Length: 272
Image 1 (cartoon, rainbow, N blue to C red):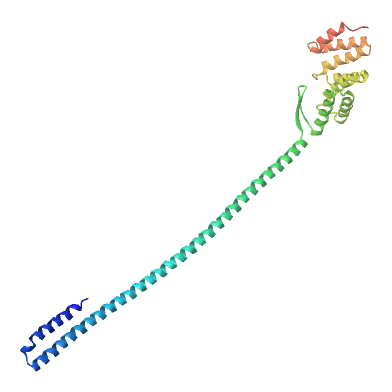
Image 2 (image 1 turned 120 degrees about the vertical axis):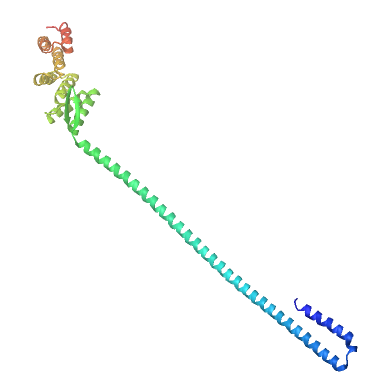
């Protein structure tokens, strides 16, 4: 420490003076001793003062350092608390965002499902409306519009005819003609009614059906076939004369038709 040098110097001086004490008288020696003591005391006091100053400075420095450390620790603690609070807020925000995303996804699913259901309903309604609307039909070279029920009745009658149920087909076609006399199906329905009656061997009624078509719609594509079928009915009824007359009418009216060619061949087999 810094006060060691003055003390050592004083001791050295004391030793020197002690060696020389014999050279002075008592008063001078006493005076020298007092002076030395004063100088040692002053040096010692100065050393203590400096020591106290250093100690105080060290204490103040330690206190300042401790206070700074305490402040730093407090700031670190505050930062940690703030960080924890911020993390908590972030976690809460993440949870809220997740809930929001879930709600949005559910909303989109619900919206998509609602749109699908609406589309299904629209399709059902459209299908029902379409069933009620007139439908375009092309039959025997003729284009026309038919009501859904009208077409359904015609198709059911024709299905029975194709199945070979002539009784059911004849009844259905006869009912159809009575219900829809102005239908675009009517002319063809008369032709097939004649065929159904022929199938059930009701030749008389079959002749009436074929004759109605040929007389009322001579330009219909089925008219030549109706005359040939009429002649066949007459042959089945053993009316050869009537059959020849009908075939003659067929050949003159429709000379280029396939039915006329078939009728000519048929003439050779007719008796009576």
